[in-house]
Length: 168
Image (tube, rainbow, N blue to C red; front, side, top):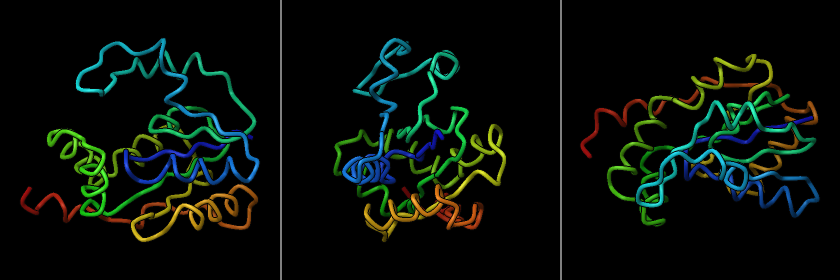
């Protein structure tokens, strides 16, 4: 079974993947697979030919972690979400340029990853988890419960759109 862990940058994908890896799960990092599909890079941000990457990706038995995981034909998909004010702090701490911070905050407020995922995945295979005040261990527990069928699919209950009316 291939399980995707996707979300906007800063929502906790890598940290959750690290926890699952420590627990003995196979983790494939999207960032380690996109090299041949990078078409441009500016200020450390890589632009990827997403369609070519997804078409060439060899399915795995395990977890695929990364911002593009929702574009793969996953058996189950987890989308991590974070309130934009907290996400801003996380991205600024990483040194993201102001324009990239704003772009990612808007994407989170507009449910971009969820909307893209719902175009490709049946809703009964999708779980959305808010990570704003939840640590990686607890989030990994929820991911595991979902994969094992102990947690039902759920999405669409988070609304961060108020962020769009706040000043920058």
